[in-house]
Length: 360
Ligand SMILES: NC(=O)c1ccc[n+]([C@@H]2O[C@H](COP(=O)([O-])OP(=O)(O)OC[C@H]3O[C@@H](n4cnc5c(N)ncnc54)[C@H](O)[C@@H]3O)[C@@H](O)[C@H]2O)c1
Ligand SMILES: [Zn+2]
Image (cartoon, rainbow, N blue to C red; front, side, top):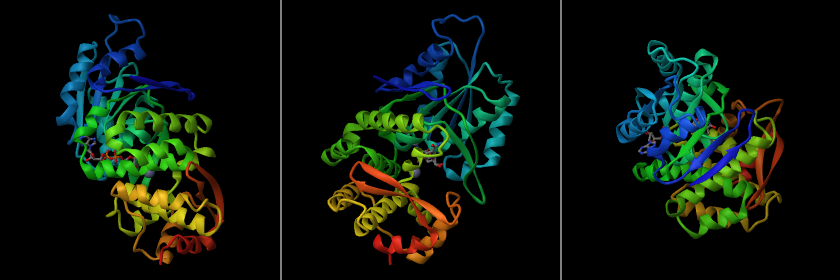
């Protein structure tokens, strides 16, 4: 078991270890009521999970919460990004109100990034904010979305347009639950894991080249969480360094949009990373040997290294992205494996970057 402390405005721990799902209640109790196993005031937990994860792990987490003295009510929503909207969010708030949850209670988000984002946003706003525990169950949620306090839901106009910064009181990662994660979802998360190696840690990138992520999941999660922690601590509200986490995302988002979200986020980010790295090498920003290493790691993980959409279409889609402002787009440009820089690029040059990245 490994504990990674995150010293944001509201500090918290991320605990990583096999079998921790059954200890979640105990760990939460220690955070909410340190040294007070027999607290007089009962505290209740609202367990929120999607329709895939609740049947798999809901009972174990409920049992663990109850054993630690929490009353427990559950809320289930239909699995998938399509549920991450204002309707489900409102439904969750109404469930919390109908069950008379108070600010001394706690929300438990059990699931992937969709559950974490939506339950987290409910926790940020219900009664102006109540504590929440993240129990991430997808590779992406364990290595990325459960840390950093960003919560959000989607609007028909775009993803993550409504949200808040709200740090969890604790994150509990049990790598054993990845066993039931569908291969395609695992692959999506792998793209973000490779992103961490690429943007800031050459030694970690080498570890990924040496063995499959599944065979070193615990170590991979610890490393990614530690890296995200360092970035988030330096830039809690996403105004500077944290932008580096967008490596591969400007072009990735454009690919997702052009495919009408038929291409999943992870696959799009993988292609986005390959394109920006190819362009960076072409334009002399990046050490050439980085490119074949990235491409072969992506391929080994079953991830794409390019796209069939045209540079003109992708540039138009990228420029309609919310991160574009003032005639410039901030591209995250690799300089070597494990190092990248934030480069403001005039919007008129975007198509040229895409072409340099091998896009037709
Ligand atoms: N808040 C942030 O900082 C941040 C960062 C990155 C991504 N995100 C968000 O995360 C979301 C994507 O996350 P995701 O890929 O985890 O999606 P997800 O939550 O929809 O999970 C993907 C699928 O895997 C299933 N699943 C999850 N864990 C499982 C398990 N252990 N066993 C079996 N099935 C399991 C889910 O039911 C779902 O069908 C997006 O909405 C994205 O915007 C947020
Ligand atoms: Zn991403």
